[in-house]
Image (cartoon, rainbow over all chains, first blue to last red; front, side, top):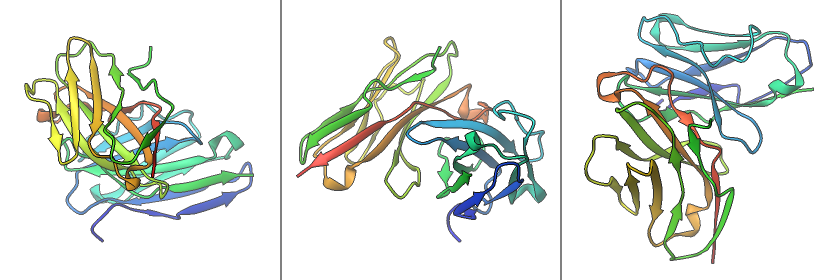
Length: 113
Length: 120
């Protein structure tokens, strides 16, 4: 596809379960970002991947959150032992790295019951 | 301290009027970039306009222009001749470091947004 693809679009889970969110960036984009948007709030930076460099994890809220990016392309954000406060829209974005414009996916709406 | 401040949680504007959405920022870097994104109800983030800290001219993209006042650390978005389809959340964001060289490793910092509603 031409844009950033995220799956699933919606995820409902029970408190304490683990979830995996997937992001497929635009082909050729070396930079990939994860953001979290809680209801009515702005975007909160989580993690940033640039090429083969070590990711910038400075925004991850706790050690229950982790992310990996395989082969410099697809990324998976994993949340272990989900809590109700993890409920939010998780947005992925990619860019050509060093270029200012980020392209966002449609997000994954995560609801933790 | 917040790095990006958007003081207008919501705005109602009559169709065809011009709109100014406020954004102030806080950084000690000399090199930085400022962005505006639109988020309609569908949830996607749509890039609107970019202003580099060294750019001398205000950025313009169609009906969008960025009123960049560096000394005041202000980067207001101006939408001319508003349309019903402009109704959305608007986010101001900043990347610190020299984005021309690939810096700004921690991505964009976003404000809390302004909910713009265009009325017919």
